[in-house]
Length: 436
Image (cartoon, rainbow, N blue to C red; front, side, top):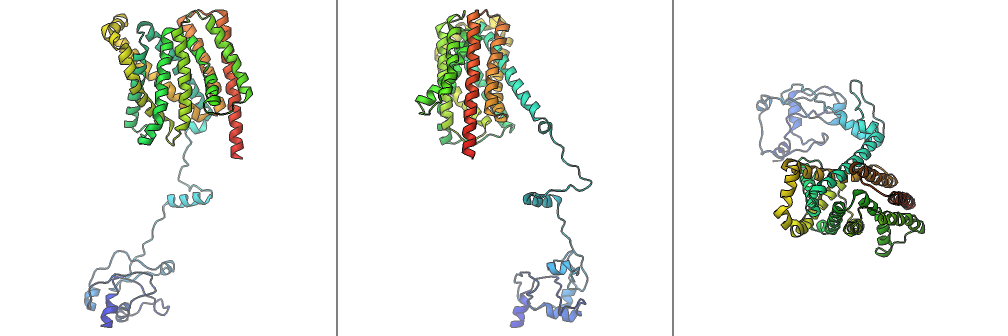
């Protein structure tokens, strides 16, 4: 019974046993009889077959496997495994892939030598010339912003319905996001109920600010709207001080004085001034200020592209009701018909599509540019963008401005530049202090 149990402990077709340290194999009978002793040195675990004896002739007539597994010590010594039929089996060497070695070396921090015959991966154009890529982002940001403002104002000249046009802006942007998600550019980030509740206040403020900005664009000159919107830093500072309870340095308040003075001078002598355009621009400043506040409270790990896409989708639902209630009846009666009679159906539809596309792309590029540069660089770039928009709008539309308006606009822009510079420097000092 003991012999049967010992025999049952082996299920290995070929294991080389080195008896007494001799390199010569034992005779077949000795090897066969010794093989039925449960091996302990081979370091291999065995499963139990059915109990019973096998004839020697039956074992030797079984085909030998193509490869054999041998202990590591015997493999390194160059010993070949022997099958139960007495034949010598080839050693099987496992190939070590270069990627395994490279990964291990990289993990240890060692320098990886590329073998001859393998080419080193070439750097991409963006890695070689990062400054050119950043400059391209700024250029496209400015260009798309200028094109949007000009095309947007041209549409309002023959289709003065800012609530409906604001909806079109978001509809085209949302369609662009859905197509991008379907292509995996970028991959859509999941959203849950908690994140939806966090982003909803941001989207409401975004919708309000967007609609009010377009109401101002439709009623006054583009240059005047942007001059009023230069007051946005003043509202940001006021909200931080009196709503969030954050202490604003006195130097920042001083830098805002020329902004208020410049906007006041420009407003007093603006030829296209009306209260609807002025109040709408001021409301948009307040709305975008609270959007910034809620954005800080809704900080998530989601990338900026997905966040902006979700905000656009939510904002669209809040822009639809006022557009339908306020402008719906007029649009159905004569609004669409008047626009089509003036420019034709094809141009009307293409203008609406492209103005929405330019709106979404310039906002997305502004976010991407912010991710590539320091806050100070982005703040200066934002000021220069407003200068470009004001200048090009005056040239394209031939808006006549008084000398006082020109001086007031210049003072306001200069004040925004000083404010942005001081604020960015203070934030940089806070980050350095926190890092140290």
